[in-house]
Image (cartoon, rainbow, N blue to C red; front, side):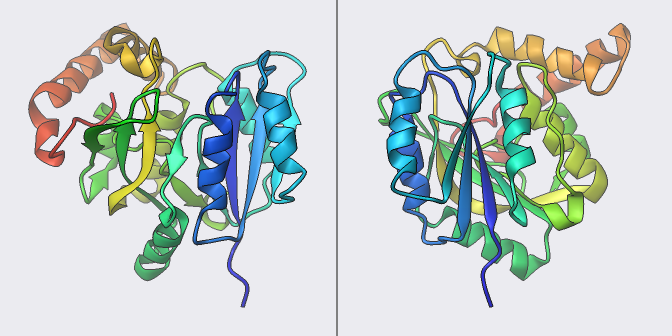
Length: 260
């Protein structure tokens, strides 16, 4: 019996420094039944030529190019439309997977009859040097917990298309993954992670992840747009969010707080 196909969604934009290593981390997977769908958002560096050279030697990798710069949400949705796998996974063009990532997650999902799972992950800097920081999450993550903090790293999530269908991604520029996980948990109520690190998240200089103030602004936008809360309701949720960040979350993570 053939293994189910995993469709890997990868948006790219000016990722020449990292994209070959990212693709290599997929090619190095012990689980080999995958397709990688890369959608480029009008890169102006050597990203396209690097990907094309790799595509010529691996027919599981597919490259599509947007006609105009539209953001990662549009790029991810374009890739999602092209996906043919039973499972959808996500990997941005500068992040990395450990070799047994897919194998361990799919085995975990099957053993526990789960339509969705994620994992812990480690952080590296722009040069790929480990920062000795591991992002962990509750082993029984509820919708309410996720509402106040995005515990799920985009590079770790996998969901079953047969159970959820293809979940369209918001076209807003930031926090798209958090809204997708909230949509998933609203349906299944709680999620279980594989309790080990299976991926490497690259913290870029001047990135949204490096600016806590910008993250707070974008989280506030999620409460206003995704949850459609009024100004007062969104403000109260942000207070709850900050309370979670400062007081409650450390009990779940031994080395670093989950991404806000």
